[in-house]
Length: 300
Image 1 (cartoon, one colour):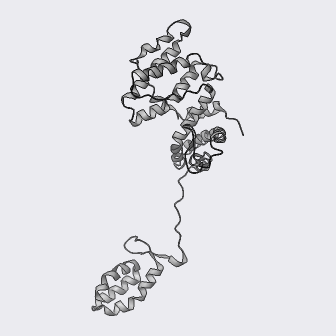
Image 2 (tube, one colour):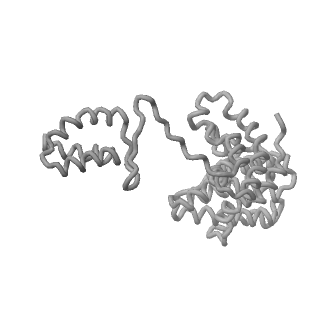
Image 3 (cartoon, one colour):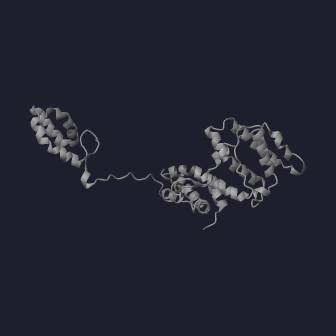
């Protein structure tokens, strides 16, 4: 199995601005009402200006979401918040191999969030704290999370005939393949439900619907799928009218059955002009004739 090139995948993702929409929903942070909780980072051994800024921003976002937690935008904010949070941590702590639990200010941030939730808020978002995961692993989780969120948009591009956009996404999907295989082996390999649904994790659901292999050929073709060809069986061949536009198809066996009744019903039509019209309609437009047949049943 080839190793995931996180730098390459991140580069391809940034070129497409895939995480821009998610980062934007968390970008307008202001001053938290409970910002004094963050003063623990103002002095002493715990002094850390970057951690203090992150603390204030985190609390503001939690307060903002708690006002209307069920709106679609806030649900999206809450779901993405832990990925955003650990990406911020990665920007502050430059030793990306260090486990989250070993970063000095993480525990204080987690405790502050817990205290604010307990005393101030009726609702909060989970930060998915895992002390044994390092920043590099969180970066991969972020990239994986975004892939699954924009998967359907990539499918739409693959049938767009926009060759430039297809090529960009083809490079992105190709660079995501090693990470997909890595997480599939880790989370889904032994899952009997892989082809049907929903094991896995928030950042890697175990469903074959999202298999990037299924995107590669469509992105290479970059064109709409061909319309399905009609299938006509020997027992139910179809006859369509030629005059007056298109009509619903009528099976041949039904036409033949009705044809057997033609002579009997024709003889019962009292008016010669109507008989002539009846014959012309059958010759030129058999479907219209079948429709007329039901009307002329009153003559029998």
